[in-house]
Length: 479
Image (cartoon, rainbow, N blue to C red; front, side, top):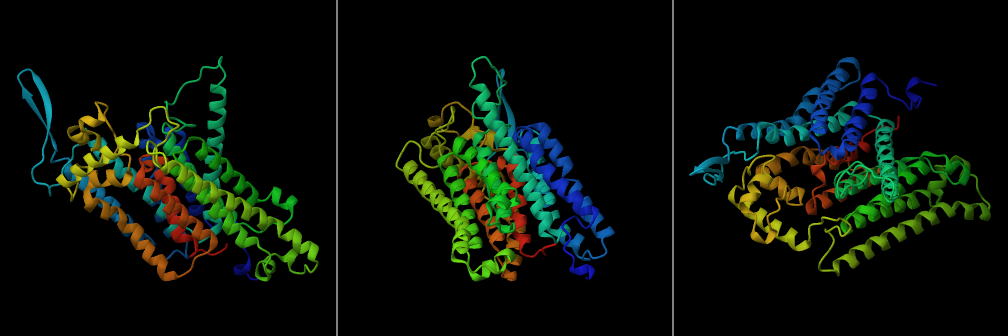
């Protein structure tokens, strides 16, 4: 047997080994540190982001088969994110907040002239640069997967470690809540709207949704298992178990929209498994122990697994539709309001926030008010109908991006994904596992329009991992 005919289910060099641990660490460490919503998590995350470019350079140096264009293309991919950092740095020289005094009192005034200027209304240079540095670190880590590995096994290992870590955090959240219900146990609180280590239950739900998709991708790619015994200790079974644990956590703390999205992803994954295991001649030919099955009784047994997948899929889609329909009939809640949260923002408040945010966009449509500036500028335009409570986010990642960075900043952030999407379309190849990755990316993008999950570093990094994995998956070999 020739060396190239051997399937090696392991890293082929040190760069792939470092890639696995770099990606997993940058995904799970922020999740443990309050979902990334802390200064410590932000600093560590940005520091870890330096490893990814160094790893790409090392890969090109040590691996003889690395394409010569690896480093130039990787650098070109990160240029839009570096440009965003540079724009934010330029805004520091033109503050949008100026201090004034009236008698013995001092106050700040919002500068509204020259709407095309690059400005910053952030509190400090760290606050202004951190969001763009975090985005750069997340993209650098995720795109290093695209340029370093050519193996589905490496991607599958990354997805499994991240999804398993998310499931462990979900179990911790269930256990923590259960212990907290015992009167004699007084536990430290992560916040009124917390789950597991996340201070925002809605951000946890988005994190869980991403790794439901990651776990179902692994299940779709894993080998078929028709016998219950072999299925019970297979990677497919553990992937489905992880997805189920994460789905229960979304149903426990998510908004109606997040519950509907989580159920839909689970249903889509089970539908793919049904299509993969249905005992057609083509599917049986892929499973060597089933190629020679002629007995009708044994063929009936082979139909049990796809029947179970079909039932679960139908139940998930029905529950998702019922969740969406039931929530929409309630005018006080609708899909995007979490009725479970103790300090929820009502639907009317969200509408008012959107209206006030659109006014801020109209004042500076090109470059916005600068990264990390929403809370400051919104305080000047916050209507009396929203009360005195300050809002740190418009409850929409899309809206916050436009307020802070304008339409130019939004376009810059979409450059790399659109370029890779065009590259992927030209390949004209989509597997079941690859389609699951794209569905997951689209599901989170939908949630980000109506909520702010990407403000969590753990969710942001997870989103980039899945999105880049979707672009890479069907161009990989099966090594």
